[in-house]
Length: 220
Image (cartoon, rainbow, N blue to C red; front, side):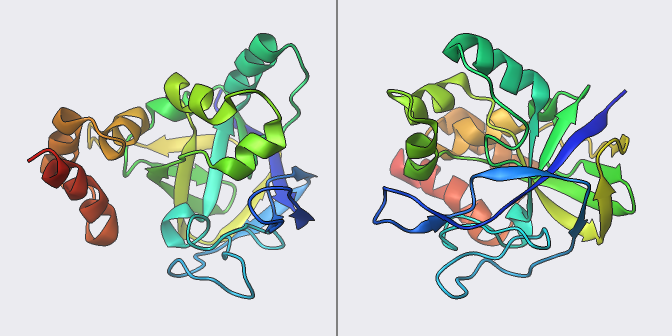
């Protein structure tokens, strides 16, 4: 049964790179989180705005905003990496707000809606790992390895605000878009064929669509 194994929030902590900025990647389990639409991506007091109350996110250019309001990652993927790296990886260790169980997060399609607790979330975008994640993990070539694995979790918007608790079921309302998150990741990082497919599916507008269009324009 798809469910929430853990809900997680992060407090600011200083990182060594880049430039000693505070980061919220060190997230820890809570009993319940409240989620709401944080509005457009923006920088407030030097950091982004999360869709999770009391959660800190770092650089607002790359974190937070309405279509990156909540980050979900599967416990099954954490277990895979724990085996590969030979170390324990607790819930929240990858900076996720929702650690899931029993659902293939990376098979989610853009536009799928997740009914969890009293909230409704929508699958919108995919994580692209940054230097902060690399520094936090402390593993050689981590960012490249994580990217090449191609299963980076789900960034979700908040359609209906509410509370999400550990143990809540995840009820999926499929979108039928046919565009999975690994497809989006490959499209935005240079796969021209997939970029065309994503554009043709009409799942993005505005700057997200332009990010994919840029891939096509660079190919000419």
